[in-house]
Image (cartoon, rainbow, N blue to C red; front, side, top):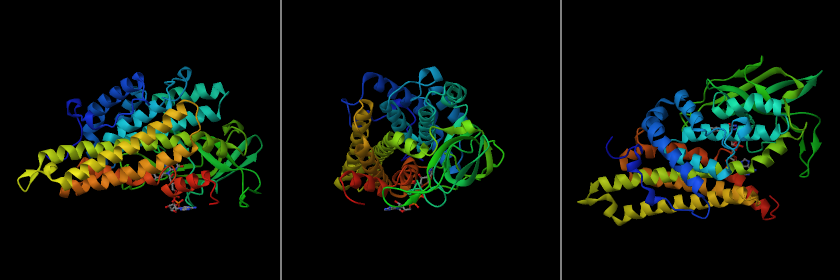
Length: 410
Ligand SMILES: Cc1cc2nc3c(=O)[nH]c(=O)nc-3n(C[C@H](O)[C@H](O)[C@H](O)COP(=O)(O)OP(=O)(O)OC[C@H]3O[C@@H](n4cnc5c(N)ncnc54)[C@H](O)[C@@H]3O)c2cc1C
């Protein structure tokens, strides 16, 4: 493969292509960015194409991300975390997705699950001391189990139930598309289940209250289904989970009974920024590759990049990446400085993920036939881009949130 390739050496990086956000990143963010970039060039990029083609989760690479400290970035240092801010996680997501979105989502889900567990179990130091150090190190994975077969956008409409039986809870139901749930490290799922009686909500719809639980995947009655055959994120790990009368102790309940879902979703608003950062990274990955390609290849006696139509396509990819980047770090900066971020999170997720898809489309077009070959980076980015407007709330859901924030009655 001579024309489009993975980014494997630092000398080969095209830093001048990045649209700087100096107001948003401090020196320590830039130093960490360099560290992650070196890690990605050394350990991630070389096998990214083959892992995606094979659809294999690489346990050694996941361990290496643990040694880097990526999983526990947001957790407190006393529990083995990095005590870092959101921009640090966004930088990590961006750099990883620039070469391998599968690793980026593996890290993302673990990092947000670690942060969510710390939030929901705040004050329960025994539990946090038992689970978090291994989770931060990547020796155990905690997955996030919300989506059900009946639908993910209407996430509060939960069919999985938890009923009290003496001091225990007994859980039945199923979850769908759960990342990091079938790896050699997968030990727990933060599971959302309906508890209590249905009551009419503000919108008149009848809903059962939903609670959060920390459920060991080895508990009797838990079945981890086979892996999905996916279009993208092919080297990440995704399974359905089935719960058949799974008995867990009373203290598996996280937070207040009936409030876990609202608490979790309210807390996780910021988690849309790392997805926006992954979108930024993917668009920049497209730009890296296409710039190289249009410099190397000639048509009609000139380098491809000398044709105005081609150069405009490259410029459009750069502009899309820049838009995603500015939206990501504007919102993450505001979050880190205690500002409200509800509209920013939905807007950044919407704009950045749509930009990544447009960038990947353009990049594959400009790569010609190579943009249809599975071993090229642009083809992998094209495959990986598709989920970005779907996972963690679809583009339609982000539009609903933005419209509601504007007072529209949707
Ligand atoms: C690879 C992968 C990994 C994932 N990892 C996880 C995970 O770790 N944990 C987890 O809990 N979930 C996970 N998900 C689930 C993901 O978050 C959902 O797929 C996503 O939220 C969409 O839900 P859905 O697939 O059920 O689509 P649906 O909700 O059925 O939506 C179908 C379509 O209808 C549209 N739609 C629905 N309602 C409305 C409305 N009111 N107005 C306008 N349009 C609407 C949607 O935008 C979409 O286009 C993962 C999914 C994938 C594919």
